[in-house]
View (cartoon, rainbow, N blue to C red):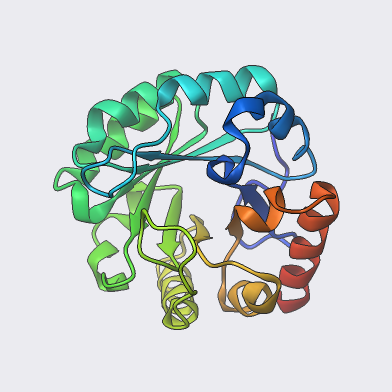
Length: 229
């Protein structure tokens, strides 16, 4: 599905519900309930780089069969390259891998693009924006973690807003157009500030899948963010 707003600096904030918070025994139905969103966010964890073991490329392929929404696949694994390429071949639009886990980031970005996916780079809370200065020209999205990767229920790290702002300033200074996504701890209370700082995509898990009306939850989060833009 081609999105007219699938680019940075657009009026509307993009919402990416994380199916990590969905009911795994009813995943097809859960995905049907988020058609008001812009992406399906798939978290892949290997139980090593982060403590939990979750989805793999097969879920990316299943999500593509279940919906026309593009898949935003976030890898939290020790060796991201093999799984990243599998996710691309399974149909993920964006495949994000952590700069902390991938010393050959430029190579992986090229290989993902060659397979038709849009490479994205993710940044842990303790990693400064300066760590991305040599890679941002080669990716289509940067994921800023608002919590430590791999643990649910954490409080949002307020410094994330300033990291988003610094990243947006870097984007403007280099005249680039990568998306800025925030993953972890996103809520109605901080969505506007994140969007004002420069965030284009907000990942939300339990906020969406814990709501009785998922479309309303998505709409309210987007409205809160757009008010900040």
